[in-house]
Amino acid sequence: MGEETTDYYVTPEEYEIAKSNGIPYRTVNARIRSSGWSKQRAITEPVLIRDRGLDENYVHKAELNGISRDVFAYRIKHGYSNEEASTIPPRNNKKFMSELGKKCRKYSKELIKMAESNGISIRTFYRRIQKNKWDPIKAATTPLIVGKERAIMGKEAYRKIHGDEFGNIIGL
Image 1 (cartoon, rainbow, N blue to C red):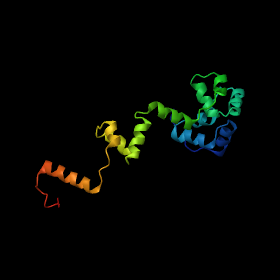
Image 2 (cartoon, one colour):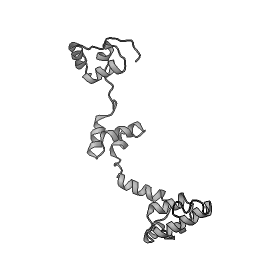
Image 3 (spheres, rainbow, N blue to C red):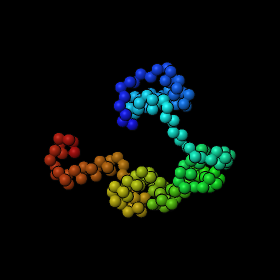
Image 4 (cartoon, rainbow, N blue to C red):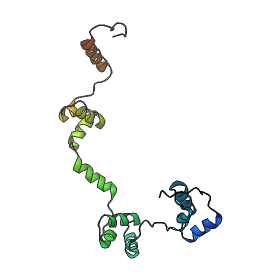
């Protein structure tokens, strides 16, 4: 990279040379126009193979075991042996996420069910605990404040802070 080049035009013959070297048309253009390679280097330097070094016998074995080539390559890259990478069954993501949810659960299912039975959504339950700093039991059992009650509480809070000023102007 960083080679000086001002000749961006690639002749059909040069594309043919690149093609005979296993280098696709788009790769030649990207190398010259985006990466600044010389034409000679762009049409002769081999393309890096993504998973060079994978044992095709084990890749085939992995695919027979329901393990994709990408998962197999990832496992090899992260220290698995060929045998382990090709035989350990892939995890079921739905099951894995369910188990992770159980492991990382902060509040019991019973507490969440209690909140739902009291008409409190999970979102409201968590907001009461996290934002309002409520105790989880209080968050699950305190009924929702609806319509008119909320307006009355808002009015009282406003008057407590601001007194009666502007109350008549805005209809409080």
